[in-house]
Image (cartoon, rainbow, N blue to C red):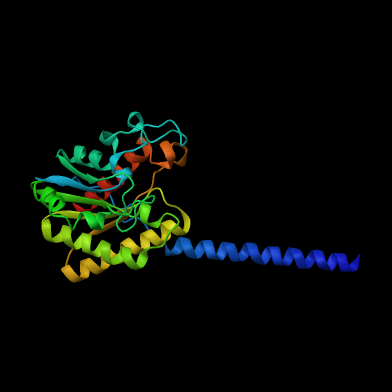
Length: 256
């Protein structure tokens, strides 16, 4: 019996050590995650923007699955609503038009699935896509939300950071008077989310330093988890409402 009690105490001790180690690692991960900027700053008025909102992103920006009743529904047109997507809501709140430069499944350097021939980095080297950007007219707000597909069960940091730097530098040079946001979220979690956030924030800091820019980094979330999910884990309409308000709040704080 004495040996059994010793073995039980040893087993419990190892289990306790394992739990403590997991808690320490989780705390370190959460500390490493950048916080959303300006959430506690009092609201000012929204800026008066004379130009369009340019939205650069993937299926999240397009509002895929937003109208879905739960996570099990397919990503089909009846459950999709670009009008309810966060970027379009921001444009509506500002009273301006928008230009959508987004595709389902696209990543900056790594797409969802097997087709890797049309990443955003590849598209932005093509004359036709650049001409499309040129034809947008005056742009006063740029919302970039890319990387969900890049970092889903993957770590392309070494390729992603320089590609994001190139993208943000391109936006800075093409739209020198625009407010530019580099966004993350809300579909990734855990380590994927931490790596994504760190990579985007690293690129933002680099471009801000090299170009004397003021690109804003903002980590979006879907708000109340009880109503945050549409089809296939995509953000629901309430989640898009919440994300839009996060961006608008930050614009108000910047406009004080």
